[in-house]
Image 1 (cartoon, protein in one colour):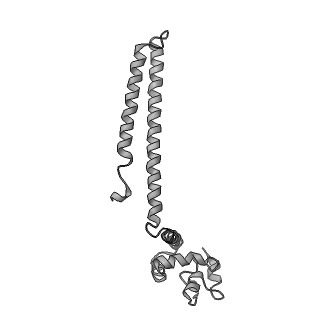
Image 2 (tube, rainbow, N blue to C red):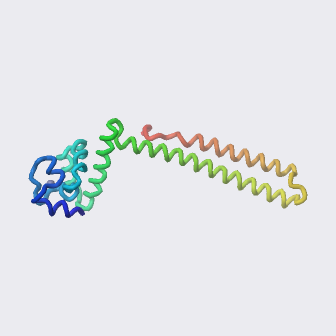
Image 3 (cartoon, rainbow, N blue to C red):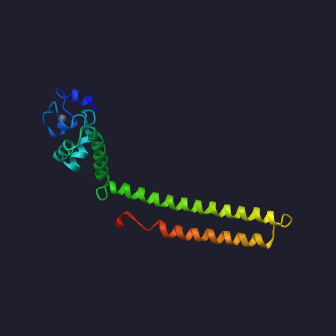
Length: 169
Ligand SMILES: [Zn+2]
């Protein structure tokens, strides 16, 4: 994937070997993923995971998965450096909260859609039954039924939305 890093191997070491002050071998496990022109990429990974752990983790993976593993480790390491307490869990938690808020909004929108549909049905059926009298008592009954359906949905929404947080597991 990053053949540039490997080609430069002999002349200039990859970013990892440069930071570790060691000779970058032809088969350096870091070289394809930590090219010399991105020195900061390895620094945080080394700080958080340790170079020997990263090396071990990469060697245990098939080559086609190493690029993704490096990307996720870089992301995790950067998040940990930025937020020493929560690391990438901070990002996961904030996204989880956004999902909860959006699910609540979606449920409210769906309940409103049901409400409008029921009202529309009530209006059209009252027109159908008594076309000359739109303010008939039957349409008022239908409307109050529509409201109660809407309120029932709201109760369900409140019950489910903030129930399970990621901290409960
Ligand atoms: Zn190297």
